[in-house]
Length: 276
Image 1: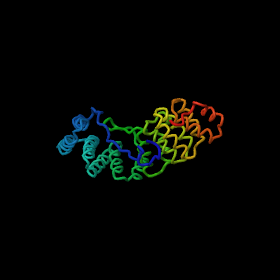
Image 2: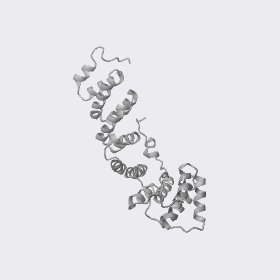
Image 3: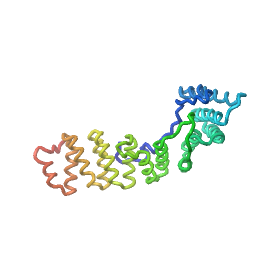
Image 4: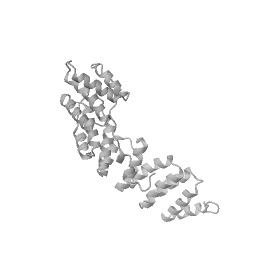
């Protein structure tokens, strides 16, 4: 779990981008529906065949409709592992209809897969789009900032990681998903931010069994943050007063921090089973 906190165990360090959803439909372009449905059903080869047949047909398309069909083809190619084909197809789609997330999303996905994290970050950072059509799949502010946080993590830029996570989750630690909370704890250690570590640890230990809560809190002790560890150990012990492990940890911290009366109370006869 969280103890030595190696970077490669972090969620953001192993982040994988997902392809866009194909659940929404645009009644303006009925030609898209069977292709969209095939991708949504996981039949990417069928989707690629349908898209290619449309594009190679004799019917005249508006630039926007052709761009949308190309997006379906590009996503199918990406999902089949044909990243260079997907990149080229997405680029052609963007040439026809620049104001879309989907084509840019594929380009970002390919950059991520090729570990071009700085290029991906800069591409997304510069991207400013207006309102997009129904067939497109807008990327939420939360997801955009999660991507940028992941690329910043992989580049070792901890301050940018923090900036993007706070933008993605403006309501704070309590509203972050669990895996992001754990990364926020790691980030607090990397940045030397004891107050941030306390904020997230108080949430994490409330949901942990005693041994894992202790493992997390020992990270504070190992970092020399004993003053911050003391109230957290008090909270953990109050939640699990039967734990001899937490009681011993609390006694040691009380002694270290000069809280001798509290330490004596905790070590009254019968209060501490040293053999436990």
